Image (tube, rainbow, N blue to C red):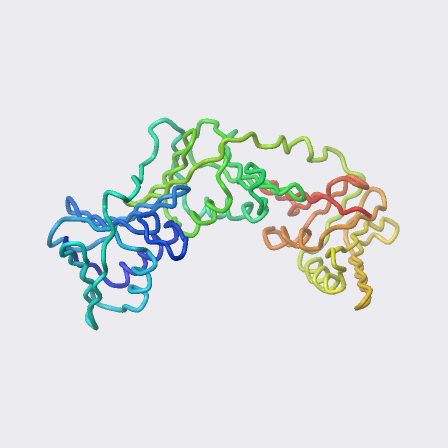
Length: 365
């Protein structure tokens, strides 16, 4: 094998591919490596950690066809220090010579037969095309709310489904839940799939903002664009029937300025206790939302915000981080807070925005 690639392009692709290789330190294995293939006028980089795999097409010049397997960490460290011009990779026996304008590195290759097969998208499954920017917005909004624990893999996943001309993403860690919709540009068959949240975040950091083809089959999800592809395993589990926990009726509702609420919440949160608790109150008599926190070693703080209130007066305690989460995700200047009562969820929405719903459970009083 003998190829030439633009240094910056090669460096970028190596860094992307290395994200999908096994990250076990101290092991020399094809599972911690990148397969570079130069065949049929195409140069590709492949990597897999058995959870996910990536195939990247790299523009370059093929002087001699062939393939090699190189440890991803070593290759990443070499390319990170290169800049400008082109880099050449020339295989001789069981070594590869990496030549740049400033020097030469010789790396021992790993057996190509040991490299795991990186499969393409499964034939059976739902296919649709969507702008990558929309997919990033949709999944990126909900994924941080998935459970960090994998004890229940369904809660550590993002639910992605299509229904009624909309693509919906949902995530929950049982303390909070977020649901977001975006319209689909074309008719897509109804489907439901679970993507591990960690995998979803890795995918979003790689796919472009331009058009991406998505294939969801029973066991695998694939994301493809311009000769590149990422494949992830899907979770085979039943997602909780979260719709039943979304309140249908509310005893108190308030609409307040998002900016004012966010600033007040940050000030009060300074005084939250070791459980990060703040108290949120609907004061219907004064037509105000109140925020209160107290810390035995620091002091206490109270904030009162004017707003449009209706219903009953009620006071509930929450983890302030869970209340803070949706604020930056809401695109409207006003937010709506809806309380279903003591011990029941609080719903946070953007005013006149039906594209996203955030629900958080209260703490014990």
